[in-house]
Amino acid sequence: MILGIYALQLVISAKRSKSLSTSFLKMQSYDIREKNFTRSFIKLFYILKMKSKSCALINIYAVVLLLMSVCFASGCDATKLIQERSTIVKNKPPTIAEDATIFPIDWLGIWKGNLEIYNTGGKLQTVPMSLEIKTTRDTLQYDWLIQYSIGPNGDHRKYTLTVVNPEKGQYQIDEHNGILLDASLINNELVSIFKVLNNQLISTYKLEGNNLIFEIIIHEADPSKSTSDTLVNGEKVPLVQSYQPTLTQKAVLTRFIP
Image (tube, rainbow, N blue to C red; front, side, top):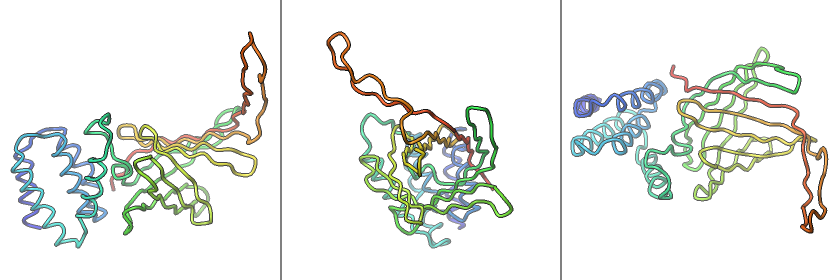
């Protein structure tokens, strides 16, 4: 670890940018407390790569030393995450900015906030909520752990996010009870739509700055009305079915640093 500390000093002395130190320390604080040393320094590597063109040689040597020392100290497999993120960055469409967030790698961590539940009459309930996203031994699967502070023991939901086809933005959430929910990543927003009994739910997670926004809109599965399906001025107007929303849930989650 002495080499790692020395290398970190080289990086900080070579780069005195406020944005660099702030971005790194936010992630490092959580990762080190969770003993995710390798991920912390991988994050630093990409911050340096995307935000700095100067002192390149010092940055490369420093990060190499960091990764070597961390791997020896923690026994982590740094190569796996570096290759995974490098592949995603390499295959990004040219319209996506270099500093765009990479899902789900840049979503990793613990997120906390309050879930606000409303119906047409107003607020029904406020429930403390947390979401933890972390890696597993399988590079195509991530723990997706949700906790609602309801009742004496809380409501714990241990789900798994599976990468199905990242080029097409296709993912799946396994609830480990026979339920598999398809999800799509659209404009950095994870969207899933599913039906439970007579209710249809639209669920979204979106990373906005330092917040992870979770929302659910619920409506009855059967349409409240069907209109048109007729001719207007000689043109065919298709049948349109309307659904009456009944309930919404929203949580603004912020990254938790122990």
